[in-house]
Image 1 (cartoon, rainbow, N blue to C red):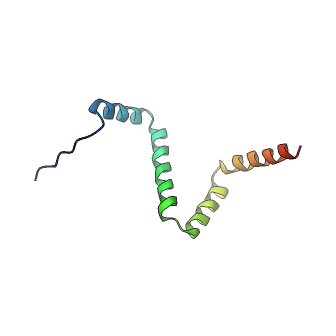
Image 2 (cartoon, rainbow, N blue to C red; image 1 turned 90 degrees about the vertical axis):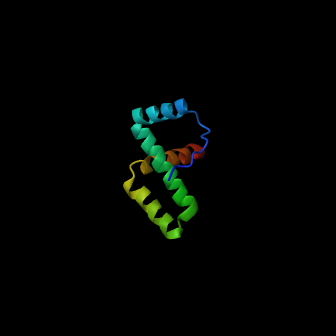
Image 3 (cartoon, one colour; image 1 turned 45 degrees about the vertical axis):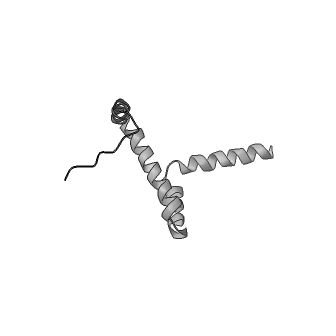
Length: 81
């Protein structure tokens, strides 16, 4: 059985350039893929229990969570001054 050919709106050189960029920037491309997947999950499938678990993981295990809390505290202190 032959594959049905579809018209691709993106040119072949553009597709190849994108693949080369992804190969050179693997970490960035991987992060963006995970980000898209996480957003899809949260927007489409997550329920309250899932969100509670994700928020707990973020606040307890993610090293970036403390930066956000510190930034919010600094903004509150600046507003009071």
